[in-house]
Image 1 (cartoon, rainbow, N blue to C red):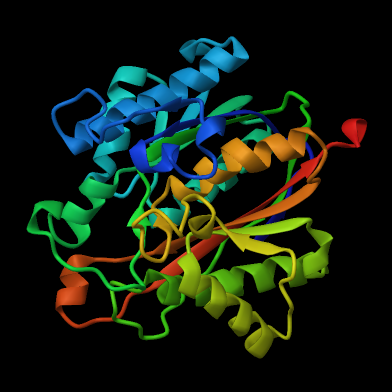
Image 2 (image 1 turned 30 degrees about the vertical axis):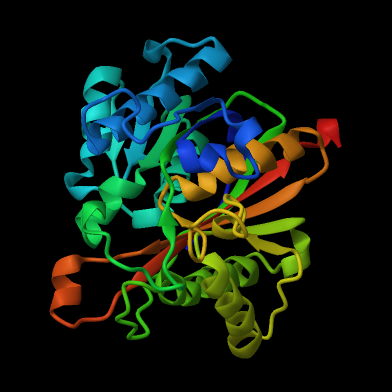
Amino acid sequence: MTFKYSNVYLNEVSTIAGPYESKGPFGRYYDKVYNDFYCGTKTWEQAECRMLVDSVDMVLYKTNKLRNDIDLHISGDLLNQIVSTNYASASIGIPLIGIYSACSTSVLGLIIGSNMVDKDEIRNCLISTSSHTNGAEKQFRQPVEYGGPKRKTSTFTTTGAASFLISTKPSQIKVESATIGRVIDLGITDSMNMGAVMAPSAASTIYDHLTSLKREPNYYDLILTGDLGIYGKRILVDYMKSEYNMELDNYDDTACMIYDLNHQPVFAGGSGPACMPLVFNSYVYKKMLEGKITRVLLVATGALLSPAMVNQKLSIPSISHAISLEVTDDIL
């Protein structure tokens, strides 16, 4: 399902990053960084809540807005019952829609918010997401204290939070269109290879988006997925050729960008709901404001991993959502 928008603009973004992210290629672009995984709190889950609140406050600070100026907050995270979002929201105090779409949560939130803004149901909408490497490992695999070995296809969950402010107020970047993805399950059961799980759903969403709008991949200066990692990125490129006869020359994956893969011990790259927005909201957003990149398709990828179902030897489904952002004509 694809939507076109006529009155939705991206007004501001924020990025809060953890210790590994701050040492990656985009460390200097983040609004705020923490040098320890606890972020001054007692637990990893509380640390994630703090980063999420920080990301909201940073957007409000940048736009000179108060929390009462925001009509709606849409947010989600990886933890059970989206507890990071819920606990953070209790202190933020803005009306909340809590969502879960694994690592595709940020773009799903942008789509929901854009649909409401475009119909003039709300004017100012805040979209947020967060993740924490140790909190995610404890929930989905094993506590990090166990020191369990990882395969080279594994990814490293990003520690961070990010927020977007969209509204009807014209800005340099407009939200142009979006596509809601389908759940795809090709029978993959390896929870240590999320790139392989998610690549087919990313391909399906990219194909649906382009064909429904009668576009070629080169319509976009950059097609950006998150978070397939080294191996999932290769699978996606090959899958687009074999299944859809499409070449992705103007393509990259945020999981391969957020860390220094040659010097940081992050296996196949990054992952987590914060992975894509940390890359886009820092480096890519800046390039769009400078007019160096004018059309970007964000394709957030989510592995719908359930430890209970994996323990029952079932496969892992995935879903990907896409949103198109374009620089407005007045700065081209």
